[in-house]
Image: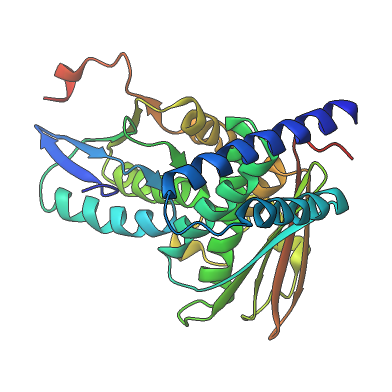
Length: 194
Length: 112
């Protein structure tokens, strides 16, 4: 706890220094109470972090080039928890698997919206990938290693296995005709311990 | 091409230079690209060159398996070259090393 607080203070000092630098760079058109404004914003940020939550919600169309987009956004958001390179790679792989499933299984040939929710609480990153596609009738079977509903599509059947291998928790809820929600949790060595 | 794959044929060896990121999106393109590069040529060995790749997921595994089946059907072989530790980990987890070999250390002359 102590260590986390210290780091938080350091972060505040750094941000203050950065703020001052930025202000100097502008030189002209300064607002007189800029310092106070910046400090106010920082306090709000810290309060959010102390409450233990930061969330990002994204919606994107189920085009396959958005798989990369989802991975990159997740990696950048996860970087706030100061993860190792390996943890980042694990997150990118898991997100890629879940989003690919939504695109090729959930929506098949249609273009629909894929929802990506990222939440940081304490040391944990929670990733929820949701679609309003065809859904999965038998979730247990879908999660079996090497099972694929599309053998002709060159699917390896390893998507869920990879998600489970790289994340600490994976739960899947699905209803045929309604859609699928994959919830994954990754616990990371955090600078804000619980 | 920033994230695109490249192909070249030397003798009966087809080299596929894998893109920076091998996912469902780029795998779809690679399937077509490899088919085009093979054309009507006699290819006995297919080498997946991962020297530029830093990301791969299970879609890449599916694509490699698909190419393996095509090559096996004509008595050909499939190899993996210069995989990064991360790509190696994904390949190992998939168990694909049981059917494809590592090109590293292979005598390239053999393929000519």
